[in-house]
Image (cartoon, rainbow, N blue to C red; front, side, top):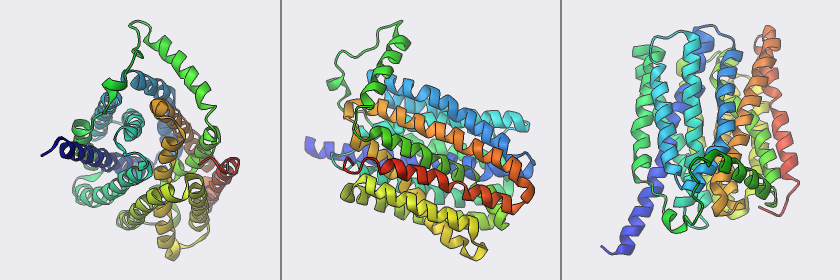
Length: 413
């Protein structure tokens, strides 16, 4: 086998292993964040949604503080993969910790740490895409990752179903942590940060001055990123849209039970059905974003989200499957196009810092959206299902603001 053939195989293995990580973290993102943990907190233990919102929001706030700094360190030291491994293992350890018999507030603390680790790891996972994606194929590789991710969601749902039926919620938490570890291993082993040594140059952080130098470099990065045409408006659009997206992800299982009365089995069927459309959306949007342009496709995705919210707030149970299909398409497309847009707009040498700042926007949205939702429900919960519908309808405002900022730069991306 020639050196060129071995190189192609190595590159393909890196792309496959990188994409498989999207599948791995779905065992946490879906089974813990979206499905079983909020139901265990709000429904089984009767704790108001605001406590789950605060646990999630505080963890996201901590990620928002650390992500840009750690992204800068990873860029300087060329250690994106090392950070990915550390935070992945941190998340897995505390996810497994949720299976222990601890009280509800300690469990919320464990969840916060696990979510912190998972979200920090995603910062470095996204940055690794620039290392392994062939030139001009960022959208396609991003779409492949999301396809694996939503395939993982289907796998996670059906593998976890007999676990929770026989062992309950705590068994599902243990199962999620173990499966997260198994499917994350290929990325931790086979993905390589190619060309790091060649391009490293003199950017090593001096000992004893690391944090000072990082903050200086980060300040400079913010200044330079502001000069990238269209990037600041893209970040604003991302922030407002992700306020709504993160809220939907967090509370869709509780909303489906409170408003439509779905039991566990019905909810699993609906999520699996939606996930099939998310797989289609992730692949199709990756291809279309490279072909048609990122801004144009983001506009379409935001309008599709508005239709989903209107349907979920105003329609009755028979139409929920249609809403679920559109929600899957929207969710599958959102992350693909957003992270591919970052790669499109930002020079490669700043990609870690850019994803750190993009993650900062995402994590602040993860604080603002869910906390506003929780506070709103404290006031509207007395209206029962109607209060939940009104709160859900209010999410459409975030996408309207997102569209406004996308319209400010029409020819950049």
